[in-house]
Length: 209
Image 1 (cartoon, helix red, strand yellow):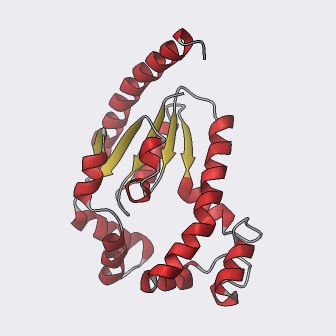
Image 2 (cartoon, helix red, strand yellow; image 1 turned 90 degrees about the vertical axis):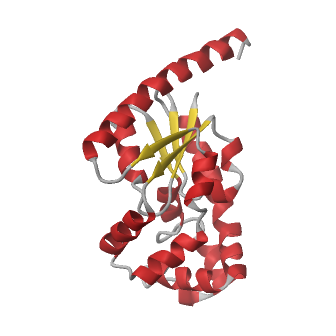
């Protein structure tokens, strides 16, 4: 099956774009949703997280206290690396399980840190970047998450630069607020991906897979 890696900076509109692809019947695997599942009450990552960081990063309901963990990870690179060593293998395993069960003309993996991870670019056939001006990102996240400008800029500073994401892209969707344009861009790419998916299936059949 053809695989697309969908990524973009915080506030770029990845979820909106993924939802538009889903409306075309495309299989979507969102690694951010998986990350939330494994850090929910009773989630697969929680025992190891509590063992590594103690009870202070665990909320009253047994889920990850995201605000505390975010503050710790941003101030301490070693803590961030420990957290990722726990969560990333679980996320990859769950994403692979979902991919094996997925149905649809092709598969879209939504991976916020696709470029930063250095691993996902080799696991997908194409990289699709949702792009927008940094000022738009900041405004959206401040409004959506009730973050301060400094908080948003600190998050963005830890992510790949806009230039690095665009350099990794096979395809780009500009999401600067024009919904009609976004709809048409997704439809255009969907038709392109259908052709690529069919071509890949033909090659695999020819090779006897």
